Every structure is written in structure tokens, then in C-alpha cells.
Image (cartoon, rainbow, N blue to C red; front, side, top):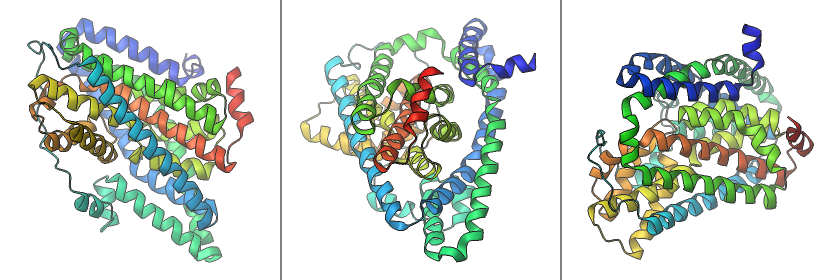
Length: 412
């Protein structure tokens, strides 16, 4: 029986757990919260992997690149693609919000209000300083991903500069990466059980009435994410990367399913790394570097939603926005998406910065908090797909991808 279970692809087991969990949650109702502990344990195991996996992967990836010139060629291409796609995503969210106006006539009487997070005012000086790992140990203990990546980059660069003298150190990080990937493979087998419990809890707690109350906003969130994936990412794959689109999505389906189920790009990072390296044919150094970087700074789904949610709040409370406000929203939504934690609900706190800047009441956060999980799942799947898309595009430009291996996924 166990053999038959493991013979089923992981994504199929995850989707099956997702559907079954939704049914159980709908029938059981609020009582489904009693099994949420199973999902919590799964997420805790995933969180356990984040810091060591990012640290070992980024250092190993940078060191394996071989020289600083190549590091620069990988980095600027990836970051440029991340910035461009982020801006397009924000404009898309603003466009959808302007055309469909989800905040007009929304009935919130049946919505169970969520708690309002403290506002997070934007200060570029503080954001810049927060990227500096003053205490690497503290950064790791507090799981601050952005300064952790900065520290890992510096360690990797240090290994490159040290040359042959740092050879033993480089081997330690290569070995650490291999060990963490094996541990990741073990933890990933818990995914169907965690997903079942989490989805049952979400559906049982919110109920269909709460979802219906904000159906238009939810629909716009999903439409925006699908447009990002189906138009923007596909265009990059076809015109920039020049790879098989079908092969790409078949190779990424495990990561997309886990991302959708857990609503955590950080939690999905181990799976994304495995998919890009094993299924998409991207070289290990390029994949480790770009995917880890993208899991922190590439949040296209979140950027789109921050723009959409700001217009939703403005429409809900009758706030008039001018073109200068749209510009501020576009700028802060991009920056805010970078600062958003890659965990379920991480985007909620970042809304405060955008809302405050254009005069949208922070009470809007309470309105969307109740159904944010349902929207967050799709946004996370979009974010993770974007990480892989930019990774493949960057690798293709540098010749660091086996396109034959990726194309073979068409036959899987």
C-alpha cells in the first residue's frame, strides 16, 4: 500500500488532499479547526528548512559560479527581469481595479472581520539599513530572509576572492546543500497531510458566505494572477527564454501545487529548487542563486494584489485617487511586495504602507483579512512561477540550461 502511495506523483497527492480537505471542511464547519495542528506541524517543518537551505544554496551557488564577472552577469539580468515584471504586475492590478471596481456595492455584512495589523510606514532609509546583516546569527534566528541573502552573497563572494585557499570551505557548503535537499525530500512527503488539514480549517472557518461577500475581489485577484502567468510569463518563456511552454509548466507543477496549497513562497522554495534543477534543466549554480533571490524580491502576485486592494479600499470608502496617487501606489506596491514576508498572509502587513500613502483607511485590511488566505494561495503560486520563469530566462541567456531536458517534460 505504501508503495502504491509513493508511486503517485506528489502534485497529484497534493491536489487530492486539497479537494478532500475542502469537502471535509465544508461538511465539518468550524470544528475542522481541531485538525489544524497537523497543518501547523507541517508548516513548522517547512520553516525549519528555510534559513539553512537559503544560506547553503546561495553560498554554494555563488561559489560555483566561478568568478565575479559571471556573478554580475547572472545578477543584473535576473534583477532587471524581476523589476520589469513587478511593475507590469502592479499596473495590471490597478487596471483591473479601475475597470471592474470590486469595492463598489460589496456587501460585507456576512464577513467575519479579521484583525487589523499595525501599519508599516515606508521609509527607504530603514529599508536599506534592514538589508545589512548587522548580526548574522540574529538574522538567522529571526528568519530575516533579505539580510540573510545579503550575508550569504558576501560569504559566496569571499570564497570566490579567496580562490583555491577557500576550496575546502566551498566543499562544505556544497555538501550542506546536498544534505538539506535530502532533508527537504523527506519533509515534502508530509505535504498532502498538511494540505488536507490546512484547507479543511480554512473552508470550515470561513464558510462559503464569507467568500461570496468578496467574490468580485477574489475573482479579480485570480484573473490578475492568471493573466500574469498566461500572458507575461508565457511571453518571457517564448520570446526571451525560447523554451517549451508545456515542458516548463509540467516541470513546475509540483512547486505550483505546493505553493497554492501552503500560500508560502518561502515554504515552497525547496520544491522550486528541485523542479528548476531536475525538471527544467537549469544549472545548479544559476538555479540556486536566482530562485533564492526571487523568493525574496520577486512577488509579482503580491504586487498586483497590493494595487488592486488599494483601489478596492478607495472604492469601498469613497476615496478619490488622482494620477499621482496611482504613481505612488505603483511604486510602493513594488517595494512593498519585495518587503512582504514569504509566508501565508505576509502581504497584509505591507498594505499599511500603501494605504497610508494615498489616504485609504486601514480598516480595509480588516475587510480583506477574512478571505486573504484564499487569494494568497493564488498569489503565491504566481510568485513561485515567476521565480522559475526568470530563472529559466536568465539561464537561457547565459547558456546555463539543458533545453533538451526541459523539452522532454512534454512527454511526462
